[in-house]
Amino acid sequence: MNSRHITHLFLVILITAGTSCNNNDKSNAGVTDSLKTDSLNTTQQSIIVPIAKENDIIDTLNSLPFVKESSQYIDSITNHKHTIAYIIDTTDKEYTVTAGYNGADRFETYYNFTINKKTREIKVQDVISGDMVTPAAFEKLRKADK
Image 1 (cartoon, rainbow, N blue to C red):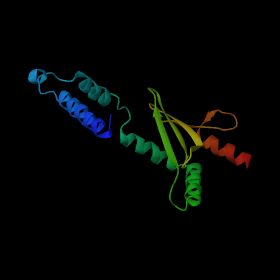
Image 2: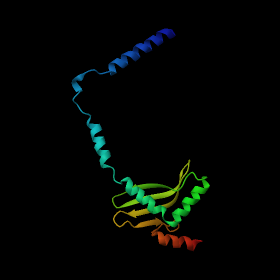
Image 3: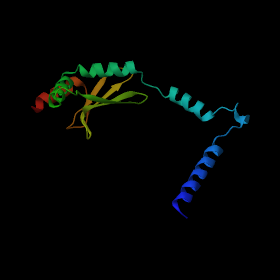
Image 4: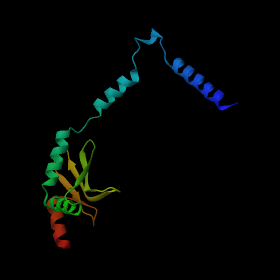
C-alpha cells in the first residue's frame, strides 16, 4: 500500500468518525445533565471559608512581631519580590495555617498556626517541643533561646 492510499484511508476514517460523533438526534434535547447540576451544587456547598475571613487571618498573623521579622527577611533575600506566604486549611473547629517562604522548588515552613473558630485564639507551634503555645509564649521561648 503506498502512502497516497494510506493518507486517503486516514482521511476517510477521520471524516467518518467526525460525522458519526456529530449527533443531530433531537430526542435528547430536553434531558439535562444531572452530573453537571450536582457538581455545581457540591461546589457551592463546599465553600466554607469566605475570602474576607482568610484576609482577616492573614492580616492578624502579619501583625505578629516574629511574622513581620520573617516577612522582612524573605523580602530582603528575594530582592523585594516576595514576602511571607500562607497555606490555609480549615476544619469544623479551627483554621490551620502554615506560614513560610514559597520558593520555586518548595514551600519552606517557618511557622504552624492554629486558630480556634469560636474563640479566635491563635496558637503557634514551638519547633523544639512541638507544643502549640500562644504567640506571647512563643516570643518568650524565642528570646530565651537567643
